[in-house]
Amino acid sequence: MSTMTPKAPTAVKGLAAIVGFLVLVEFASGILQGYYTPIYPQIADHLSIHEGDINWFEAAQLIVSALCIPLLARLGDLVGHKRVLLISTAVTALGSWWLAFAPTFSTFLLGWAVQGAYVVWLPLEIAIIHRRTRTSGRQELLTRRGAAILVGSLELAVIVGALTSGLLVDSLDMNILLALPALVVTAVFFVILVGIEQVPGDDRGGIDWTGLALVTLALGVLMGGLVLLRLNGPASLLGWATIALSLVAMVVFWRFEQRHPEPIVDVRLLSSPAQWPVQVTAFLFGIPVLGGQIPLSTYAQADPDERGYGLGADPAFMSTLIGLYVVTLAIGAFTLPLTTRLLGGVRRALVLACVLVGVGYLLWLPFHDETWQALVNMAVAGLGSGALVAALPAAAAAAAPPERTGIATGMTNGTKTVGGAIASAIFAIALTATGSLDATAEKVAPLGGYLTVWAVCAGASFLAALALLAAPRHAFSDAREVLEDALPH
Image 1 (tube, rainbow, N blue to C red):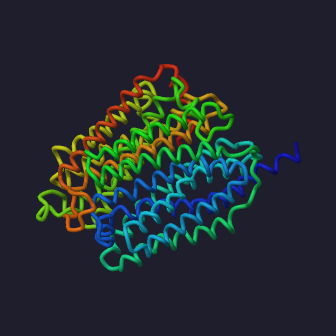
Image 2 (image 1 turned 90 degrees about the vertical axis):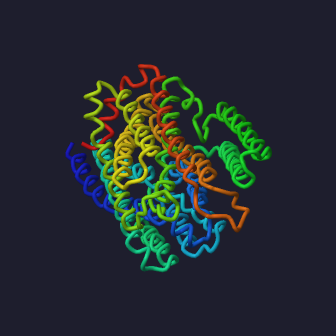
Image 3 (image 1 turned 135 degrees about the vertical axis):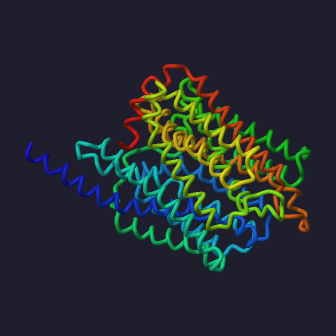
């Protein structure tokens, strides 16, 4: 007994230092997630592109992110989480520096896509904490607390990033402004290199490269079809044929994964009666929470005197709006256990959260002319979004077998990301008055495009509520315990 007791304090002491370093990593992640949103219209002007084309950046990055999650997470288990965290940070830094000097739409699109490698940071960090606390005797508790600190740092950094870019956009050259996040990510690479210990991977086996290639092909062909519709119009037979081909590729991928002993995506778990409603909800939730952010930014900064719509917000005030939205996200997340108890179940709380997101975006249709209306709309949607961000991974874990809870929670992030990527591409089409092949065309989006975006976001949220109602009752029987165990107290 005497030889065992010193290990727990040592593990706790070491954990404090590691979490401190990882907080810096998540702070950089938050900077990336908040920095660009207030300056999307300025980036469009810098590249001389259509306002709606900004959505293609988000679509490309989200697709890369969705493909990175299963690959890098699996690679971390095989070769060590620090090593993969360093690789993903180096790739993110490369993409961030590329953005600072990219002169054209296509080069900027490439850099933005590469930058999406940061999506795997948080899962890898939590895995590092979980591994580091193995001998502490309080592994699960310490992992939860560490994750809560990291998420709190992320949310704070989103606000800091948004405020910083909004305040500096009018005083700095765009290339210098875009170089600041690259400096932050580069510094974080050395933080990881010096501050995190290297531990070999625990798992054995290999990576399902064929499955990864098939899902990459399916998603790539789908995005190609959407690009063709963007360039040639909604009547393009080639565009629709390409989309149909992507669906065929997805069926081939699905059948291959069903037979694979170690699939890159566990489609058998994904399609189980208790799991699919949660994953469908995550996919649909990705449409407003990821796909709807750029349209909100560009609409808020549109000058109503010039276009007949918009709020006329400058980047600095846009940063304030983003900060308020993040605060409502945090409120929705941290009050979720209370909401669950008041409503008498996790399913009811999740359904209410979906309805709140839907109502928030539905309010944009009649109420979009005044700043106070935008604040109310964003607050309603933010409360629901925060609850879903916090609860969906826990709900997926509760609906999964004990040995597959990690896979289930990771899949909610992946399906949400794919939903956001597809939505971003569709919204890019909706927000374009004419095809981008016309160099003399007006580069501003029509009001009808924004109305379409908000209607789609609202409809997706209400469909998500219906999907949750379709889940069997036993799917959420243990979800309250998992939820309250997963959220910070």
